[in-house]
Image (cartoon, rainbow, N blue to C red; front, side):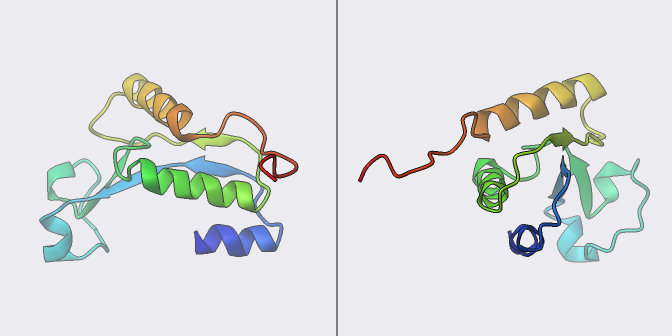
Length: 115
């Protein structure tokens, strides 16, 4: 969220890619995350790209989307799908469904309605 905050303060967010990663629970602690294992060797890697929502859960994505809204970003989220464990179509469909479930769909209130 720090990067979003700082880039937002500098009015430097123009486009956002929605992309996720997951750490392998055994390989990452043993080998570190500066991975040189080929992407195709998924089970040998310390981390892999995942479909949005399969690496980080709802809470983290809600925090990301909230941070973007706080800095005034109201643009497109481009799903970047490089998940070796799901087909292109399935990964895209699951990413869209996940983002729809956590993304605000209405503009924020201009004034506090509860006061």
